[in-house]
Amino acid sequence: MPRPDERLRDFEAQRPRLRRLAYRMTGSLAEAEDLVQEAWLRWARTGESVDAPAAFLTRIVTRLCLDHMKSARVRRESYVGAWLPDPLVGSFDPRDAGDGAAGDLTLTLMLALERLSPLERAAFLLHDVFGMALGEVATALDRDPAAVRQLAARARKHVHEARPRYRVEQAEADRIARAFFAASRDGDIATLKAMLADDVIVRSDGGGKVIAFLNIIRGIDKVLRLFAGIARKFQDKPVMLARVEIDGLPGYISHDRGGVLRTTALEISDGRIAAIYIMRNPDKLHHVVAALAAEGAIREAGASSPSS
Image 1 (cartoon, rainbow, N blue to C red):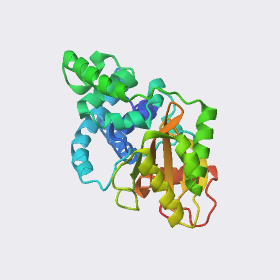
Image 2: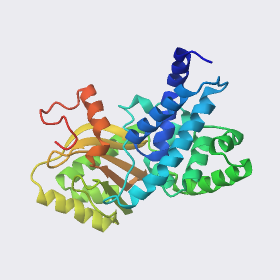
Image 3: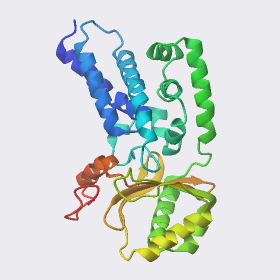
Image 4: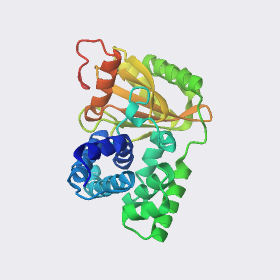
């Protein structure tokens, strides 16, 4: 039987990878942390020697995620307004570094994963994103390899249809994000019209905790009227706190009108903004507050909580 310190060492070596897998499965950092902690408890109670800790722990976390997602889907059906995954702020969150393709899974593709069954999602993530052999994936999912191959193929088709076809260079991403923030802050409709795609959408997640758009706003005319109306209605201006990448998309963190913290991610297609993803749900922004505070980006006395 391995010593407790050896078991802890093996687990800590896998923890970042397990956390990324759990987040990609659930879309929630808090739930990912809880599931990885439960995996540790099961790993610590394992009395037998394990030749391949990485595969063993991956199997535990995957099965925990699948069980969790059964109840999570029920809760999602009663969610207030549009749902978005917890924003992963790339420049501040070192936990999402590494794993090659895992770091390339953008918010756009995370939303595409939501349309998959839990098993399809697991098969795609384990095989296509985390690079596991199909045989290992079949063991993790307790399914026949042929069935897993079909699951992964169906998932791959759906996900690839949603994959962005336009790669944004860092300098262009920074320029677009800053220009969009300034134009939306000032109600500069002419500039916004030049930046937005005709079929642009706005998706906003407040979780019923703060004001957000309950429905997805679709089409450039509706979106322009939306920003014009907000600029007319509110006298106070939002403040950009940091220009960051959010789940692989250009974006920023800001204090919105009324002092609510938010993240904004922009999906770019052919040089124009095709989608705007706004996170205002304070329950999903605690990690952003902590990261900003650690970076010294929040200095206002009242900015210690997401909904201040």
